[in-house]
Image 1: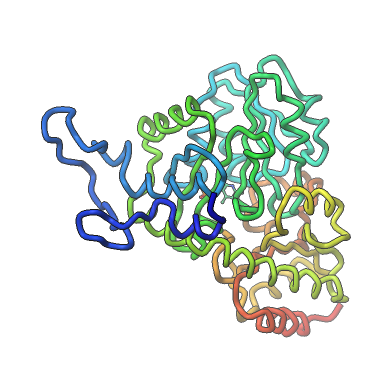
Image 2: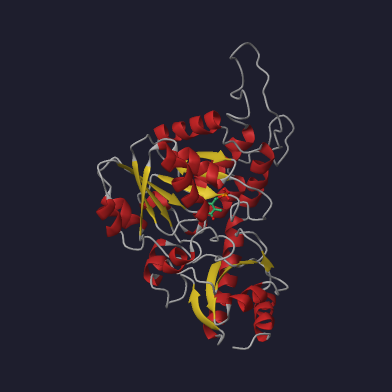
Length: 383
Ligand SMILES: *Cc1c(COP(=O)(O)O)cnc(C)c1O
């Protein structure tokens, strides 16, 4: 098998036959001509399938080391498709530190359809074992988590359910297939919000679900078509353009993230730094074993009041204050008032998302400019 970067550039990007176009075009069409009823070239209607979907699926599944991929209109769309394989009465065990939108989808949508959810501390695999019921059909892991960058030992969790009919789903959005390949560790499905590192340029919303299980993959394709979870051909084309530089970008993201984390560790106005690449991270050993690198996300707690923290993160010149992550540009956000605002303060603080916590999606800019931006902004505050 060819290397990661070669596959990222070439998989699903065979030059187009009728013209020789090196980059396959955007098939911006809702429907496809048929020669006779039901006699066609494999495509009928874009809600069900489109060449741009398949091109992206070929690349994404290859990078995950898998046979099948299905792309969706968003990460949440991919999650919806995976959950739709369940039935009323089924039980799901998930980490208690999930992306807020995932938690909302579970508790505010699928819970209404008779599916029950238990949320456990996912840093301890035995918690999944303790929560098992005979109705358990799915285990949902996100590693590393947002915004505290906690890890789950994927192999250990998969081992617990190995002989049972329980699927393990891993949200691989933060690590990406460049740094972590859960299917090789025993997981059944990997999902990504391709909005983040895979798209990589903050210009597209998308998602995918990847698996080696043919039956599951057919159910995911069925879910896309039946529930209208499809992406647009153009968005897939954009995401595919992003995929080609995923490896290059991740190298740069994590280089910069490590420098930012080291800068924070030394800084007197910062009390706590969360980055899996720091030997002081409680799961540094697991991160070194499970991941091929530590990624581009860093969180930190400042020795500042909430008001000061808000002022600080609004005053950067290179870091942009915005939700989302994984784009080429550095972003900063305040989880307590932005991504986690809907979580009650008490519950939020219990999980470690305090008022002084700030999350950084470290981009690919020049390292010195990022450090200077942080230094200059911090210099304006007294502790
Ligand atoms: C953003 C995100 C999602 C949801 O993806 P969308 O593309 O925004 O729907 C799911 N999981 C994680 C970890 C995310 O960061």
